[in-house]
Image 1 (cartoon, rainbow, N blue to C red):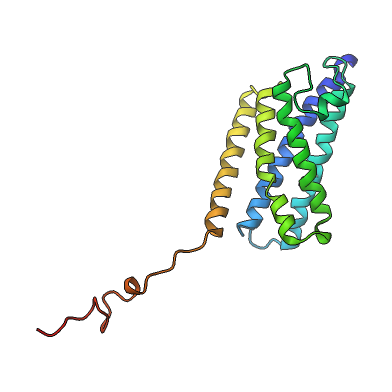
Image 2: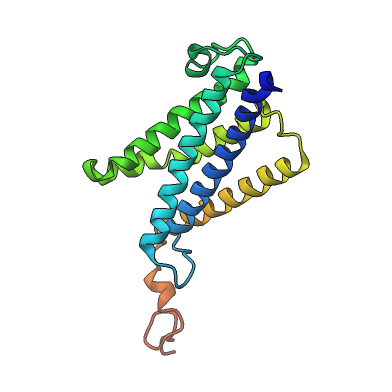
Length: 199
């Protein structure tokens, strides 16, 4: 049992990290689409978003650290830091490695937000969407527990929610088409389409 302890810690850490990342991304989209629940203070919602992101980073560290300590996989630093360097399913592990770098970029720039130009912070923060995609792919293809019905339902539900909120966000950001004057004045007295020329 002791020999498998770190393997169980790695599995549990990975699942919790993915769940926290998903919650952080969903909450961030709720904030950006202004779907914040009523009677909830904006400062509290932002703090919750940051807290979830920070916890996701911590449990990602737990996941990676436990993998390094696990004797079954025998991973070294290069295996968890360099894509395709792992001898165990290098393609599956690579998704997670790239996700780690995106997570660090998003989290570190969020901590240094006050020192960064708002434009650059927003561009980097958008990486949380591909981060969610890469982490989800890694969970599905490399996760030992990904085949469980509960895990599949969680992945499908979370992906649908992220896609739906992202579509809503993009729709709200897209510029509205200008209304043509002719269409706006159609049928009104004195307009070219609303008046008749004398016969």
